[in-house]
Image 1 (cartoon, helix red, strand yellow):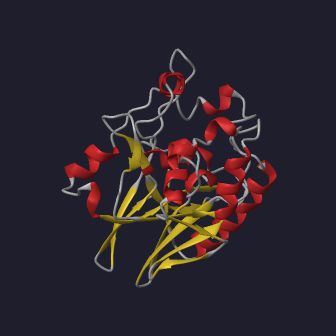
Image 2 (tube, helix red, strand yellow):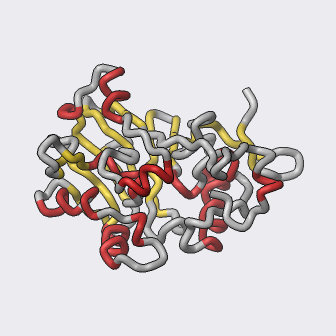
Length: 254
């Protein structure tokens, strides 16, 4: 999660367990917009290979969380994936009691970037383990997934913007209501521990572009007072950002 940042530095922010793992969230966002239920990200799901599930100590709980707020999976009408790594789109589909893969949200239109899907299909050695085709190819085949080509509106009040770095075509999701904006920034800034421009994950394919994308994001998000939503921070899922006296980007104090 911290790439070349030395452990004595990052461990001041978060402690690792005996297997050198840290606790992370897989935060999804449920939005009601224009009378429609929109789900941003779908987490790990229930199809992860046994080896990966053990490594990540994965817990498939999204559907239980939706049920806890009174939402059935059939009610979701829009699903947006920031990118197609397994921990962001795992519940796009699920494995039923017969062992078959089917859409988790049968009445939803799913959105992802075309370039992201094309990259995943290449199955390159560097990151092929992150792309599990059962999470998205069934939706391409049945017409439920729409592939986007760059920045644009998904629906009124919800748009996507490309921030390259983690992958070439990772998209952030911008939510707008009146004069307020929030941004699901995904793995550009996965946690509040990664606010420093140079604290870049080893998972990032283009680390120098991550730095420039963060710089671009901070300039706009701080100036326009955006709420930033973090995908993997289990303690601080969202926060406003500001610069401190030393010019460092930090979460804004209440």
